[in-house]
Image 1 (cartoon, chains in turn yellow, brown):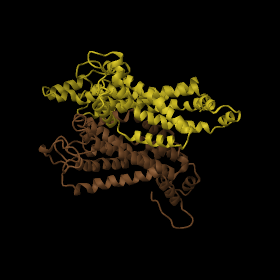
Image 2 (cartoon, rainbow over the protein chains, first blue to last red):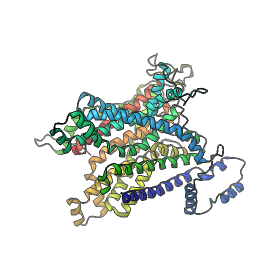
Image 3 (tube, helix red, strand yellow):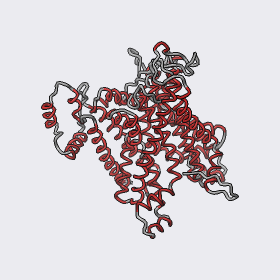
Length: 316
Length: 291
């Protein structure tokens, strides 16, 4: 087990190095590279620019610059926002809570609803319910998230007036009930794609388990069907879903970006787009790197957790 | 990939696949809708009396079915139907062209990684893993914001952020196929590595490649809509399904039709390509059917 974890950890570190190299390359793609902020200001002469270039060490060879940049990233110095000079990590930190709130709520909806639909679909394979669920899931996966957000706002906020059209709270209220009221619509929108994915994977995982010998044995023993499904089948079918949760993470994060835009949700995705609008490259790069690292850690945790609950994995 | 409809008593594999595909009603419907959307986008603008960029400030926000404008007009008095059709040209072309480029990159990377394996394969596939760590929309929007927006840039960037799944599919296929007898025979014949890769192995992996290509078009259309909606893709006055929704939220209360038409078009196109891909998967290789 320890060897498996160490192995997996080493892989993750290797990936992180490649991810950081890609991030560094993108940073230098920016018009004017890391200097763009100064180049945009008309008060700076070419001489000033050259001096800043030397001061920031941008005249050194790229590999040296990369190592220097990597070193600062590792030490937690991710640069400062062009907008207000705040440290990038603390800017991200102050927006992370809102995004996580959205993501966790959407995941809970997706796991419960998608899991239920998937299990029923597998147990009653090719039934009307199963067919409708399969088609519904495909359509849900094809709807652009932001457009589903617009439709939700139109129906539930503009036409029915049940839900607020955006923001995390009513200014001056901010009670638990108010927060929940604001959470419903964006969480629902973000959960759409996740629910469809969970439904599809849950269905195929459950189908695989149902055809296993030990399920037939349980039936042969005369166990009631409900008990077989709940205790024998579902528990085993849930195991691979740990991996799915890890794999779904990038989609979930990307979906949060779009959902936050539509609902003016004050999270990381909203911050990301605002920062791009302001050409605030340190924050943009920070969020890009931060999200890639979240994805990496997410899949690492999913793999380790899977190995813990299913010893067969460690053998490979 | 050509599907041959054979008249002989012994059905060819292609005919069997076509019969399986025909039974997949949703895939057939998808193919039909794609053809209709493409035809409407290609020919429709010639049949309409309105130009997609013609601004008629006196006729702003005309609701659908009121007078000459079938789907109404937008905030500048432009005909929504004309923009929808011209936008369809842009969005569908981007979907197809980005797919072709993404397939080329993915097949190349996957074939080399799967054929040579070892250190080269490991490095290439770790690169795939690393790019997949970035949530696609974040990566795409960042790259789009850093470069000059336009038709070509948007297409290339969508391809650059969607080739990885293809590389994974092709790598797995090639790695398995190169152990097979016909590949070993090709080596014995003295064929060059490149010839074995692209004349022997890749053609034998054509079924999963065609499926991946179809699903890739769906992803590309979706990505175009995201990046254009956020303002970093196709720039006005040119229309695309994504950028037509760009301002739709502001006018959601007064002119909801501006949001409905492009959204329905995107959903219809993406769903159709997804169903088509599903049907092709079932038809070309029944064993591949996992879900």
